[in-house]
Image (cartoon, rainbow, N blue to C red; front, side, top):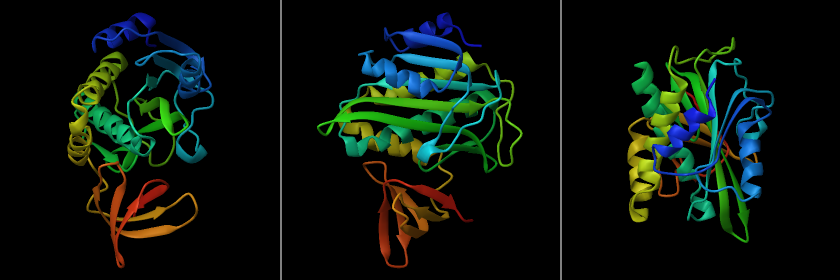
Length: 249
């Protein structure tokens, strides 16, 4: 289990000074971090847990972990970013974790749009971004990462194996910070380049189902400057900003 000393060292490695919380069990690290955000916690506040009892993914889906067999962490951000560009942070988190996980495990870890990580087309990790927005301004974004080291006994799920969670989390946070804290005018281009280098979505036939039930099918060709997925359909290019995306082949 990660300790608060581990987390302080990780936060210090990006030259930040923020609260840390290492829990044995919690309902959700994201929920805990969002509560801290409401109380005014600063950027880079870091929360981890050895087990979640109510872990969650996008669109209300659950997240199942093996107690003590996952990296479960949430980091609080206070970005100077328009609400319609928050999707870029999910892509940056995915690329950063894919790079860190591949380096730590020797596996080929790939990103799907917008938030899952795969090994041999099996899910090994997920990213969940939740934001607090008021009057059109982003007050806080909590980025949650869940990475299977020892995978739960579920179809289509993979694990990284014997990876040091502290080293993995540190590499992830440093990789994320390097781009996030870089020149603002280069943010979108740098995120796109890093994510495209690790993508398992671009070039594949996909079907996207929007939150309103609309279906967009075609070949995924790119992500745009806001992090949205561009799909070439029979009727021309379409842009998908939210919803579930399935790779068909």
